[in-house]
Image (cartoon, rainbow, N blue to C red; front, side, top):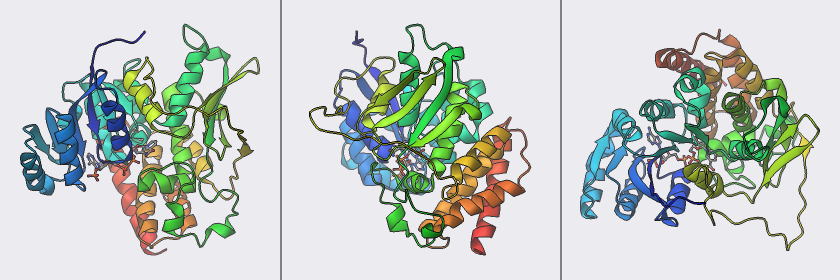
Length: 394
Ligand SMILES: NC(=O)c1ccc[n+]([C@@H]2O[C@H](COP(=O)([O-])OP(=O)(O)OC[C@H]3O[C@@H](n4cnc5c(N)ncnc54)[C@H](OP(=O)(O)O)[C@@H]3O)[C@@H](O)[C@H]2O)c1
């Protein structure tokens, strides 16, 4: 049974891939959801103003203070009278704005402040910004109350559904043998390490099954995204790294699976469309009818599964290593990667150099506690400086 209460949503990163798909879900379900606040970086002011004019939020925030005059002008031109917030503190204020659910669709570790602000304010947090959970794992877990943190990543939404399907009172943790996270394998699946040397940013940005923002698209090509997702699964579901497998499934229809101790496997399947996990997180625990098209069973399908080539794509093994080390190690992995992706997209680093450089930065790091935002930011800052030094000489 579906409730008829409208859920208010704060959308962070509204102009991005996740943000625009979230607004599509909200627009198609006006009685179910309404937008309380929107926030974005400041790169697409016209789009942000158009979104505000359509969804009439109470507040609009922009992270770049320099974009404030243009935003005010664009909002006034459209007759929008929302409270306007600016700067990182303005985005954090939007994250704590009164609402039922905050959807964090910001890219990168800088989403951590918003994640913490939303949790501190007691909001349900639909988390697309996996980086904030990975870099601030202990901080986020300490703040999040049971049921307060909902995954938007398709793999983790799948795992949650498989665990949910395991029993009416929730899964018996002792009956779960392993989590099996699927990976498309990215555009370079099947290539050897040597064959990856010459790939260009254009090739890395052409994902075979998903249309996403540039950072996550490159992370999908290097498999760093899968590494981040393994850490995310560990943090969300409290399952050890030795019980989280990665399997390559190029069709991206089975989004992940749970294997139980009796040998049974439950899988969640749907054509690749982020609107499904977004709608599930916004409507949780109720489903949103028509959120995305289902598999067409009148057509023939072939779904294949193959092991991951750890030699060509060492990012997942490296993520397991930093995840098991814990503390500030995942923050260093993520921060070094963000710098390396930027260097690769700027033509300053070859494709295999991304994970090689991340591994070099991780090897130099002595993990410390991630007990405060300051400790996390210090490790993040150090990793960025070190990665910049290494990519400058690459
Ligand atoms: N895209 C997917 O299908 C997908 C799937 C699973 C998980 N995710 C995760 O979802 C997150 C978003 O990914 P995406 O692909 O949607 O990225 P994206 O297309 O690059 O969008 C990023 C959004 O964040 C905004 N932003 C940047 N800096 C900000 C700041 N300081 N404060 C507030 N907003 C800021 C951007 O605003 P401007 O437009 O102004 O720059 C934009 O709206 C990432 O963590 C990614 O790993 C994405």
